[in-house]
Image (tube, rainbow, N blue to C red; front, side, top):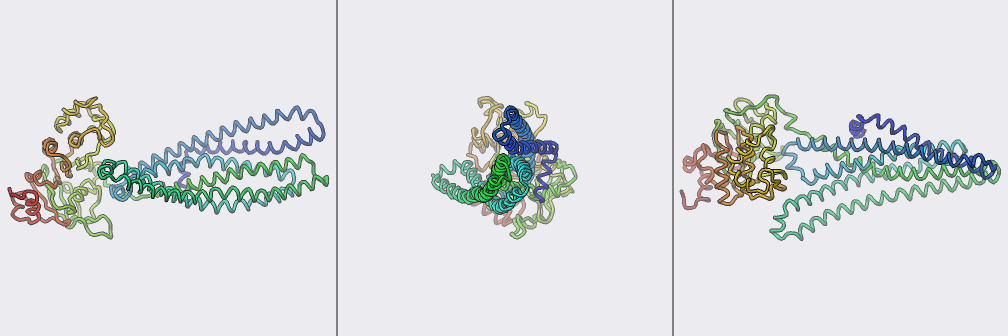
Length: 575
């Protein structure tokens, strides 16, 4: 019931469309009832009483009935299908809005393929149910109209015939529950397949490099087999419902024919009444069959809707604890005050008792072995995750008191894997920036040492660079992301292994671009190569989630065992 109420919220703006669709379905149902009813005057008046007037009139009546039926059926279908498209559009928009606003934690725990499946497959399942819903409404009214004809022709026999209806409805309910169950599982399996496809295609270079095509094929076949097994079970319940209905209907029809035929033979009823009655009973079969099919689709849609609203109900702990202040980090310290952090309550702390005060304009290098917590530490600054205890402050203000989007506008990030959109160079550099001029973009590109190679592209700044910037080299992609950060002009900068994936020549160019980017900014630099950070103002050494030492390069070579070990591993011949 709760689910239906939530779905109704999307339909409510179109309540008048739905109302008139119901009205039009009544006309369609009345037309079906009239089709069955006119059999009596046609048979009795034309074939038994030889009334020529009825013979002349009947073709016009038949054409008129079906003309009315066709017009109102079109109007009903159009209104409901249009409503369905608008509703699905709203659901898809809201679902994407919800997902895109969820915190990084959610994406780290969810497969991209599964999320794509929710927006496409699940929403499409809801969309495909709209015609089924229309059918169920219309055919229900048709059954009621035909039932009225049956009871009018012969109340006693009609009551007996309609007694069979509960025997049809009960199996429908039970089978519907099974179909809903297997539909939900099927959508989950389809999400798994989407996830496998997304991983295989995104990582195709790795797959090819390791000649691992056969394993990827086998992995896909396993998931595909699970999906097919589930769908076969669903097919069983889908297909068993129609024969069951036919059998129950046939039993009822056989008894009606016997009893009704007996009344005609005995002269109690006319052939016209009998055939009109039988026609109405027979015409009920098709609506029941269509309702059965529609019910199966609707059950699948309900399962899909449940999965959609699971996402809608996902808590967003970041935005739900959003601050109210606007952030201006320029000229202010960044302070870590007794910061502890763990990803889940039942896990160990990844960061422990972090205390660090960074003056504005300072370059802070964060070093340590893999798993020391370097990337996690800088991820707390833009509130990709919230601290478990303690606080991070900008100036004297806890960052949780700032509006999240305002905070993040003050922070620029250049990561190890530069992400570019399948768009032009210009739009990638100007991403998220409003009212940016061509001169602004070009100046940012020049400062990032990207202008020259951009001009060599087929269409310069208007060149579309492909998915993830695949048409560019690693160094070129990184320089465009640096240009993007320069254009944003944030007071706080995070560089997370920004040059580690580059060759020596590219690294030198990118390093020069980074120097331009870091001027007059508070910069947090993560690097495995100590050669890129030895000139930093401050170096923070992390070890197992704790600060082992803080100082300059020369100071740490004397007082930090961890730093000295890292240094000698990379510079075995000493300075």
